[in-house]
Amino acid sequence: MAWTWRAVVVGAALATVSSPLGGQESTAAGTTAAGTLGRAAMSVDLAGMDATARVRVDYRLQVPPGVTQVPITLLVPRPVGVTDIVARTPTRILEVDLPASETAQRQGVLRFPGEPPTGALTLIVEYAVERSVRPAGAAVEALVPVLAVDWPPADPLPGTFTARLAVPNTVTLHESFPTTLAGPHSDGERGLWDLELSVLPAYLTVRGRVGEAPLLSLSRAVDGGVLALLLILGLVGWRRLREAV
Image (cartoon, rainbow, N blue to C red; front, side, top):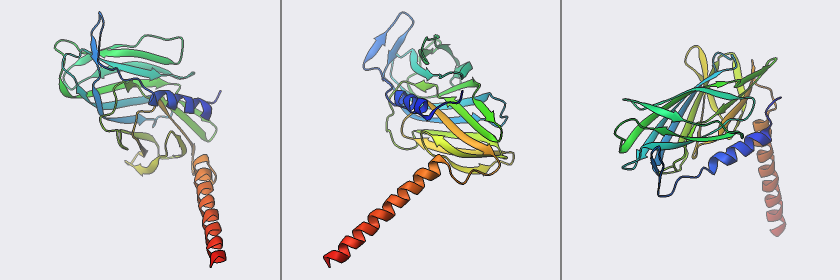
């Protein structure tokens, strides 16, 4: 069963309504306070096109004093599965506590071992996405969940979240959500496609095909519709101006 654009829209909406913790919350397992997100840079390796995507997210965080854990959210729509989650800083491994859920949305924490850090921190999260890639003849579709830190952006501008997707040079991507892709450029063996947003999405979806992109795609149809509307408005305005003269 192919994923629908409606499901993608719902997922993206859930991500942008992430609920950063106000104040400080203490539990038996640790203390969570509202830190801030500087930026998140995601890399997705789809070069194998073997159904499993390899993901890495580099977070730049500002951690308040006394915080022993970082809240996280992961939205995993069926049939996708996320496994092999590893979280670390440049010097130590964090404990991943992400309980299973009866719904697609899972919430948990990443716990710091030993003395908690304070101030600027680089947090690296890596995981595998099973059943991410769904080929159908020459067509290819991929869905990649984003394991999101539930802290608000310090400055929510374009570039707060960036992603680079690597696919075989033989594959051309022609549709994406929740934003358009820039590319491709090549590193010699793979085609690289980039995107950026001002917030963290719940997940990314892309569609493409082996070979050239089709002449008509969703993004091209939208761009064409906007251009046609602008031309019509321009003609109407020019006509009214001539009548007024």
